[in-house]
Image 1 (spheres, rainbow, N blue to C red):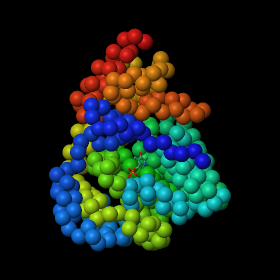
Image 2 (cartoon, helix red, strand yellow; image 1 turned 30 degrees about the vertical axis):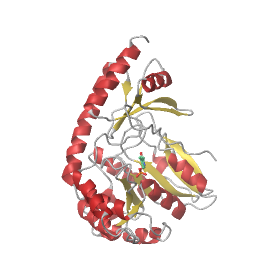
Image 3 (cartoon, rainbow, N blue to C red; image 1 turned 135 degrees about the vertical axis):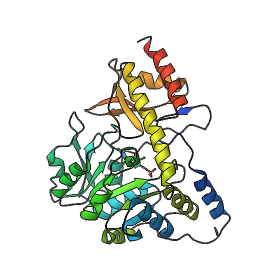
Image 4 (cartoon, rainbow, N blue to C red; image 1 turned 180 degrees about the vertical axis):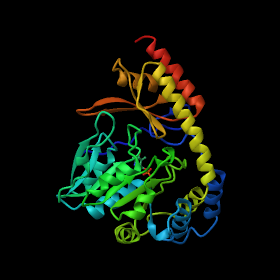
Length: 342
Ligand SMILES: *Cc1c(COP(=O)(O)O)cnc(C)c1O
């Protein structure tokens, strides 16, 4: 099988890292204090297998009826694994839009399942056929906002697509905190709409590994049967609980990053890039010169890492994560110096 290739992680140092959509800001002090407190506690004991304190805090912060609506995982990637393992058997199918998050296909491959892709149109909308599922399609993934585009479908569009599906629709909301809208309320109304979230992006905790699912209690109960018994450790449960309880910290950091994203969009457009309007913490851009790979390599040589992506039968371009304002200034200086010679 083809392996999934994650974005490059260089040794920490001078590199400006804009390639894997991490938060450029560290997590809140409350999160660090919670880890220190947990580390001084009972690490000789196993953690709570179902992360009850986290699930309670998440239900409270997200306005859910209770912790039984939440399943905690070792990163939302583990939640996605559990979903594919639970719903898509051998020779059954996973559906996903194209281009989107490449990991989904790997998860289907691991299960011996098939996958099929349905392309976004030129405006990053999906055809109604995306919501029409034959018997062998057992699960549909929809990253919203999507990666690499940063574009969103509105909750009413998601609801309409799900209404014609005969299987669950997983709305992967890894970037929803940056979008100002999400599908959590739809989960309350429809048992076939499931939402996944991560603490890796907006909460600045990619190094921690924590994500979760929001679904109706009977769905959570069944999926919990197939997770690893101790899938989240004591330190990450403590940190994630502190993080999800810090909604003001989140609002502040999101506001700051969205302002930087808007500056990136303006700046890149001025340099001649075609920038897709983004609701996430990254932007997708192409340049009329078509020299995306060369730009990526030039930036890398100058210690700025962005993501060069190539999608067969679709095209290539650069996905650039939102950094601090200083990092984006440095990026712009390098891009201008490259483009002067194009
Ligand atoms: C980053 C990302 C994830 C993975 O999140 P983790 O919690 O770090 O595993 C899931 N889905 C999408 C679309 C992502 O971009």
